[in-house]
Image 1 (cartoon, one colour):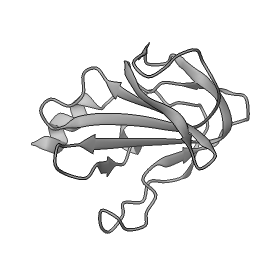
Image 2 (cartoon, rainbow, N blue to C red; image 1 turned 90 degrees about the vertical axis):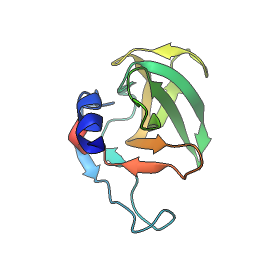
Image 3 (cartoon, rainbow, N blue to C red; image 1 turned 120 degrees about the vertical axis):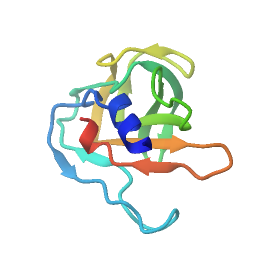
Image 4 (tube, rainbow, N blue to C red; image 1 turned 90 degrees about the horizontal axis):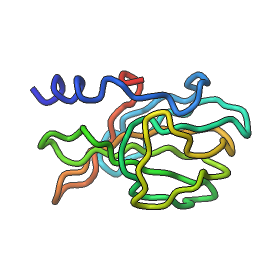
Length: 137
């Protein structure tokens, strides 16, 4: 039941940029094993990067020389844990901060390099589970 309900709720992610996927999601064999927990999208430096969903910004910061923006969607979760959508590789940021609201398709900033998109489900007491965002684009 969870995959069906989740699929319906997640059916409409707006791609953060218009470029093709250059590095697909690779599910890790275990929680802390190697894998690619995001999809990477080709872009041009300076291209607008938009929010995949409407929601509240929960994180803005640099991790290993890349800026990431995380959005908690308004209508996704439904008792299955908190869903978080993260976009990485954002260069010049639009004017917002943690707690700000953003609309699907709203500009987060401009591309610094390749853009990454990840989706994770957080359940209290358990590590985050990363999900392949490709079917929802």
